Length: 169
Image (cartoon, rainbow, N blue to C red; front, side, top):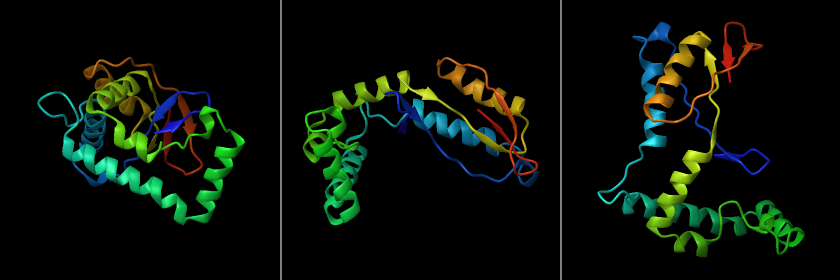
C-alpha cells in the first residue's frame, strides 16, 4: 500500500512465479485469483470482522515497528523532523500511526476502514513476462468483474528494455 502523492491510496502486491513454459499454464491465473481473494475476500470471523488472532498479531507487529524507531537514529531523526516541521498538521503524524491509536482501534472501525480503503483505492496491475497483454487483461478483468469492482482497460506500454518482456499498466 502506498500514497500516490495527492491523497489517494494505491494497493500493490508483488508476485513472482515461473512462466507458463515451465508449468501447466495455470500458475498465473491461480496467483491472480489468490491475490484478489486475499484483497477482496479476507479471512473474517462469523460476525464479519477480522479474526481476533490476526488482528492481535498485526497490532503487535505494528506497535513493535513503531517502538523500534527510537533505536534507529536515522528513522528517529526523520520522525522528529516531521513532528517539528509540521507541528499541529496531519503531516506530523507517523504513517503507521501511534501505539495508542493502533491499540485503540475497534474491530468495527477496522473492518469499516478496510472496506472503505478497498472500495476507494486505485488499482494498478503491472506484469512482466511472456504472456500477451490481452491474455493478462482477460484474466485480471475476470477477477475485477467476479468481485464486482469497476474495471478500466489496460494501456499497453510496449516492450521493456529487457528483450522478451512486456509490461501492461
